[in-house]
Length: 105
Image (cartoon, rainbow, N blue to C red):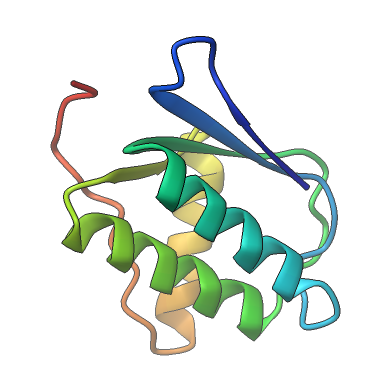
């Protein structure tokens, strides 16, 4: 897992490459917090993430809500992965809405 800013320091990329489960959710949370503090536009990439449990889904729901409430943008780069995550959240009763019709300004 890693967070990186682009050369302009205006956009960031959060890359997840391991399970998002209770065992390592604190690392993911720290990365979300770093991203939130450093930029207003963050894209999430998943590279071979094979497991996500309730704690992982809750973290994503919370992060999206926090970014949205502060007019920051958090998005998942792959639309199919975004829809899968949204579906899983809804299945367990969590509200997870990624529909943010905003520009990258």
